[in-house]
Length: 118
Length: 145
Image 1 (cartoon, helix red, strand yellow):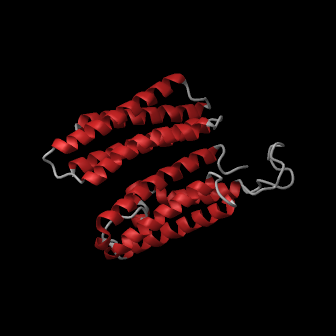
Image 2 (image 1 turned 90 degrees about the vertical axis):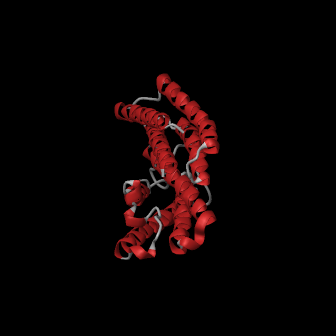
Image 3 (image 1 turned 180 degrees about the horizontal axis):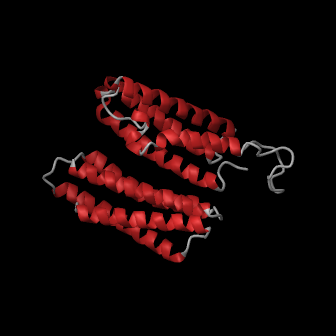
């Protein structure tokens, strides 16, 4: 697993989270560019599951495998759950839910990196 | 007002994140090495269950969700205060971290602030039925939510 990739994922998650917060502040609905950004992020997280498992299989490091795979899978779940929960909220708080999901995703990827580098 | 609308939507999302992370963490701790820190790991399980119940009841699921939510968030506040204090006074009690040790310092103190916001939100939305409420006409029955 490449730390640079994880840092990029964290940066994009935080960017999407910040964007969502701006939408809350200016009282707007979720817009298409944000949906595309979050879709791309989710796709990258799915690729990370495959990449992470391959890296785990070939690495010489002593990584806590169960914990690592647990974080890989949880990181994939949070965004779709957040989008589903935000979808039926037609106020400014819809993007607020997305902000929570994005920040949580960033935290999960950070924890994933911690487990890998421990 | 329902607890799962407006700002409540965000609150439920935060609770959901904690339910998932505390649940996964405690499940892993118990499966991996329960004997290493039985008290800490048991408390992790309790915390995870409390977060799960709070999430579901604040989302309006189940029987009498408002009552369940008051109870779950109340237990959560007591839990984070008790475990937080104990972990500071006697760190030896908790050889491994729980969500609530050090008043949730490992999670940016969100576990300490969250129950206060939860109780505040339940209080704020308490007039959900009865006279002159904001219940839509399509839901005239006085079921509790």
